[in-house]
Image (tube, rainbow, N blue to C red; front, top):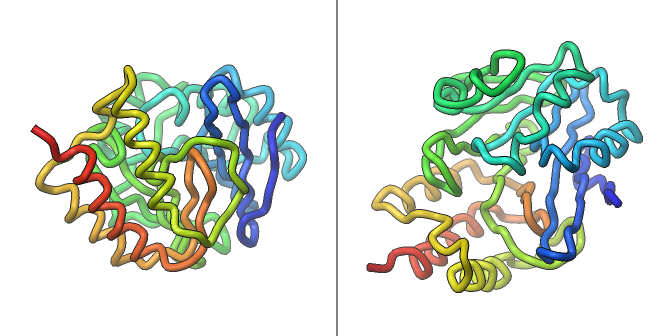
Length: 241
């Protein structure tokens, strides 16, 4: 079952909890003149997500399908969306477009840098490249400037089936999730470099007020402090010999 919740004006969270993993997979629909979906989702989840989107808009009217980095739960279902939405375009970082997406996708992607602005009507978006944060050379975060929403992908990943949105600190559940991952077969899922703290500080400078989190509750409040605190938690768990 897909849970649908409006977590901010025109911003809907479409969440599928997988009990075997005890983890939510969250996808975000922005209802605007040119509707946008952030996270195309796993291919197997496409029928459930399509039906959820259909409760909010006609899926054929989707115009933009965006994600952070090339990974199955981010863009595995991309071509299924493109087949039912003839005017939709993939949207990712320029690196993502050049190294992976245009070979995978049935239509070329819009590859963005932070100098580029995507308008969907009321809302304006920029992609800020964040290599290897959370994963991959091509990684980036998507920032909506009008309402200061940061689509932050796997940043602040935490387990369970928590509420759609919280104003509570996400650092404790994020730290717990990192420790759990580091003790399992997926250890080392987030690299740490000398640039990690600087990238997170630059994202904090955007002063986001809503954080759209892929795995776990989204956040409303002072996102800048949360991002600064996250830098310390990442160093604590991944800056190891």
